[in-house]
Length: 193
Image (tube, rainbow, N blue to C red; front, side, top):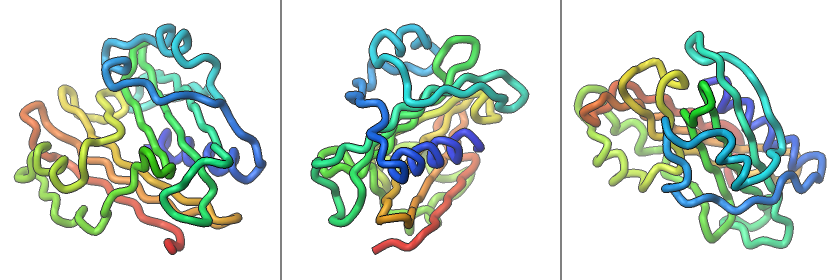
């Protein structure tokens, strides 16, 4: 999922350049409905994003709006980490098809126990079991961000930046229409302290 890698790079750029990014307040879940919320509604609610991009996902045109903010002075989950939170929204034909929130702020950190990813089994594990293991997903995606249609993905992500050292982890769990896992992708890189 190149769009996920791209927004992580955006976050790193925000932190490394000392730029505060675009200050924003995380919208309520009801304000960001996949397949329904329009790009215009998001722009009216959140304003101009830190970065905008156009691209392709599974052969379909997508547009990505990235909101990232380094909240210097905020309380972080882990001491010594640059405080940041980010929201990446992907649109296809003007409608929201992916939302992904990441925060290392104490009040709404999206950290999760990646060691449990090995317990997820394609064809057996259900969405309810994934949520029981990792908590409510701070992100979701539908086609064309994922290949399955119909279907959806639960997106978990977390990162910490210490000086110039970035540690990140990302879990993508793709579900069929009945809510059973069909694919799992887990990435954990960096030096965690």
